[in-house]
Image (cartoon, rainbow, N blue to C red; front, side, top):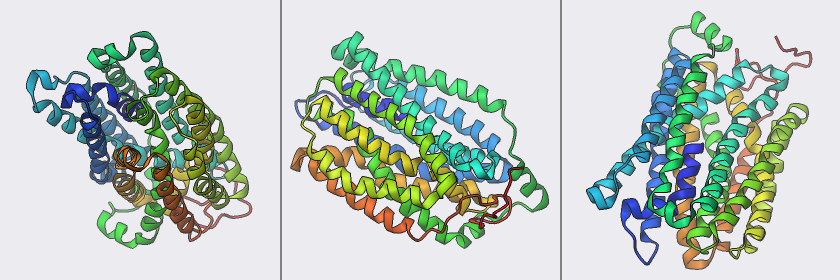
Length: 411
């Protein structure tokens, strides 16, 4: 997630390097459109790496996605500019974003499957929250790096050359990820399923699981739009409101810290009261609060911090248990590809377009108008959540969404 955050955070600074400088905001909008290209590549990555995960194991897939992410990030870090190779710079940026999208599309569902399968059933919600703790931590570190660089080297240096620093560090992070994943063992749930059954016919199994696939898409729709709305808020304030970069970056850091604290608490609560109540609390809260909070936005970091902080705490509720909930809905034989494709498809269609839509709507009708779009999406996801039966404590080694037993004890 660090890779994705630094792109949206520093887009306003490196836009001129790939698309030229102009008095309007055409170059910035071009970088946001390329940002969406990475989301479009996610479903393809989820199918490719998801198939690897469900056939050869979670560990093998995670190694492959980490290596792919490394390649995409380094392409951006050392890419020549438009002043050097002309339009080829923009094309190279698109290629790099496609590679990153392929990696992310396969990595997140494989990581979610891995954590869900090694977690004790009674604590799966709390363990599942580690996925989005990691995601928010990556976003936090990326935003924090932006604040530090804005304060030390300044906007002019960031535009000229310093925007490359985060992408070099991201490459080092991918190397660390490779080293860490190399040391993990395959999950017992996958090993047992693979041992006692033939390799699954992925297309047939996915066709059978159409209902949970649609539920995952419906849930992800509202969550990803709301999350990406606030994730892109820093770049929006810098490019549209012309806010001072350092102050809004620090405001985003504070909001992400609140989310880091809230995520495991929501996860533990879901292990006590169930997945559905926690998901509904978060989605209804986002639907009701987003538009009023966005009415406050005027370019000041204080109002952005208030709106983003409240929203991130509410969003932490469904985010904390989304990996566990999705894993509990889909059979082990297609857990990664079944979850990953549905999730990636929703994020590609609805999440990847958020920064560009946010900038366009904000310039045309003001940032408040986009809040209505976010609220509507959250209401749709709320309706979908009502159709999902409770999955807390499901046995992942047997059936999807199996009803928990009253005497369930972790193995």
